[in-house]
Structure formats: structure tokens, C-alpha cells
Figure 1 (cartoon, helix red, strand yellow):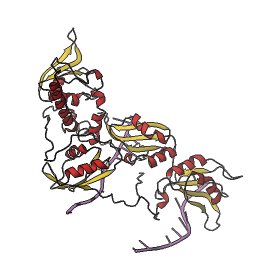
Figure 2 (cartoon, helix red, strand yellow; figure 1 turned 30 degrees about the vertical axis):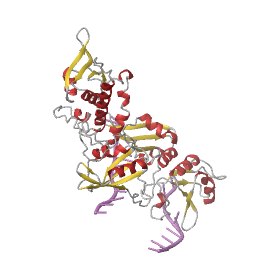
Figure 3 (cartoon, rainbow, N blue to C red; figure 1 turned 90 degrees about the vertical axis):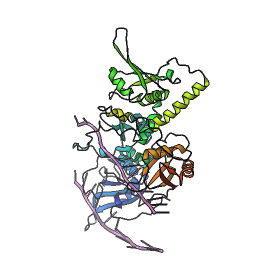
Figure 4 (cartoon, rainbow, N blue to C red; figure 1 turned 180 degrees about the horizontal axis):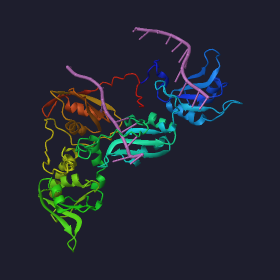
Length: 467
DNA sequence: CGACGGGACGC
DNA sequence: CGACGGGACGC
């Protein structure tokens, strides 16, 4: 179904990009000799030995078109500097400049070894390396981060040692990485318009990948110091490397309603120990505060560690335990989805209007299964639903809340300016379950049509966007 | 009826 | 130094 006949067009010579070689040889080197030496590297689509129009003599320049860039690159790497016939000079082999560019400058390895990829925001540079090392030796991996918060922007660079490795990665890696060759860095740094970057407060909560991942791996904070992972209390201990004032801790934890006590812990000499005790008048607030603020950077660069403290309350009765787990589960769901979150606190100046747990974000008569984790952002999409909203689209966060409950939700995409959207799933069954449960139903006053999406209109195979 | 996006690096 | 031809159309 992906087969497309080769459609001749003016620039098909460079499709895919960097699949054509430029050879400089002795004039005596023939097409046959070239074919003999280059066909081991892959499917040759065309060989053209440039000749003088009148004399028909070779100008010592040839073009070799491969089916794939990786083949062309490997041929270049292997053949550059080699002698292909007795008594001829070593040949030079470069990736040909695209016909459109008009430039005759040699294409350098520098431009062919670094790829640019979209990645889940939870990806570390190690994750990036793990993901791409199968394609070749990696020189380095860099993730683009917000310079002030250190938060990943979900974009990364991977530098390989050889052009063929980068080309193979681009050709074979999961397409959700949208791997392309990176533009060489320019000295002109006009790119970063992130003036209010640090002030902006829309990162985490509005980003599905972030919310999913941060809480998926967030467990590493939450459960990090294992000893406390199994008790849940109204009482929290806050630890910080940077010393905090009582006022700071108070302001932060008072964002969650129900705080009834907050005090810095002091050593016997009365010095601040960098720890604070916080207590809420209810379990739910404490759970919420712990989940939201543990691992939170405050001030930026300083991660808070928030853990439960045994407050001596009786948790022994089975009923008490169950109640506690129920509250905890509810609060976790809310935390996981809630629009309120650390971003509130990031508007550092104004601790004023904390939008606090507003529980019913989704109102519907449909019986919904419990919340489920999103699938990783780079999951293979196995099924897409097409959703029509009447009279107007629901917000993405609401849609995620609703559609994640059937499992393996990869992404919600709303078509801008229309009353329709797509829901992507990693498993077909989950998509079908969602469709069965939600088609024709009303959520937050919006009527939904939920159908299987038609396959995307596949234009010509134009996925090359090397610049 | 109601249909298909998105991306850039402190020297 | 070393850069761009030839072929050719269906429901």
C-alpha cells in the first residue's frame, strides 16, 4: 500500500535527499567501471558520466544516483580516494549538491553526520543515545532545554561519526522521531526568541507528554527513598539543599488548601536545617501537595524532596487503610490530569490566585473507566479515531482525560479552526473500546461523534525536509 | 454532515 | 583542479 511508481519530475534526481554522488575521476574512467565499483553499495538508479557535447570526451565528472542516501553515503565513505582502474588517479567522491541549490561547494561530513529529532520530553541524553546507538557510533547527544528551567523542549541532536550512520538512522528510526539532518549551526543567533521563557507558565500541565512522563517516571522521586513509600499521612517533611525561609515554604504549600501547620526544623542551636514540617487538615491535600511539590524546583535548580511523615495517626484498621488508599487514588488522578500544577508556582511573583483542585473537570453521563497512563509519545500508532464535536471542540486536556481511560492513548490532535480532531492509540482494541463507549455521547455539554479515521491522504512520498 | 500539524542549538 | 543528460504520458 505504500508502493508508488516513480514519478519523473524535475528534481527527482535528488530524491531522497543526499542519495546522489558527485565523482571526480580521470577522464578515462567509464560508466562500466563506475558501476562495477559502486553497485556493491546498493541500488544504483542512474549513472551519468558528464561528457563534452562536441568531442564526447569525459570531463572527468560523474553522477551516481542511489535509491537511498545511506547507500550513497556508504559508497562515498568506502570509495573516496580509491583507485578504480590501472593508471588512473584516485577518485574523489562527494554527496552531490542538490540540483536546485546551484552551489558547487563540496558537501562536508559536518553537514551529513548530525541529525535533529523530536523526542518525548522525558528523554534524557542517555535515552537518546540508547535509542540511536544501533545506527552507529555516536559522537554526542544533546537535548535542547529551556535555559532557565532546564526543561527539555522535546528536541535533540545526535552526532554520528559517519554520514552513512546518520542516514541509516534517518531512514530506519521510528518515524515519530521525525529525524532529519540537522542544519549546521550558524553564527547568526537570531533563533531564540524566548524572551519570556522563564516567565511563561504553560509548560508541564499543558503538555500531554510531559504530564504523562513526569508522573510515569516521577515515581522515581515519589518512591525514591523507599522507606516512606507505603505510608500516607497528613504530615509532610520538606527537604531542600538550598536553605529556604519559613515564608517561602509557607507560601508554596499554602497553595494547596487545608494547610494547618508549617514550621522550619531547627537544629539544637536554632539554625535552620533546610527542612520544614508541613501538615494539612486532610489527607487529600497532603497527597496532592506531596505529588505536586516533590521534585519541584524551587527556587529553580533546587529540587524539593517532600515525603510523608508518620504522624502517629492510627492507620491500622483495614477500613482506615482502604479509605486512605481511595483518597490517595482520587488525588493521584487529579494530580495526574489537573490543569493546576507547578506552573502556578512558577509565576513566582504572584502566589496570589492558586487555581486549586477543581475536581469535576469532566462531566458526562457516560460511565468512564479509571484514568490510565498515556502511551509513550513515540509509540507506534495502530489506530486513529476521528471525532466530530458539536457545537465546539473540547479542550485537549479534557479529551485526554476522557480518551486515555481506554488505554494506550498516544495523542489528541485538534484540527485548528474546525470542530474535529484525531485521537491516536497504540492499540486498536483500546480505540475500539473508546469509540464504543463515547460515540454519540455528550461530554461537558459537547456531543461527540467518534469514528475510525480514514487513512491520511497520502500525497506523493514527500517526507524529505532536509532544510 | 466533519478530515490531517508540529522543529533548532549560548561562543 | 571538478557540477548537471536523456527519456517521454493513462485513466
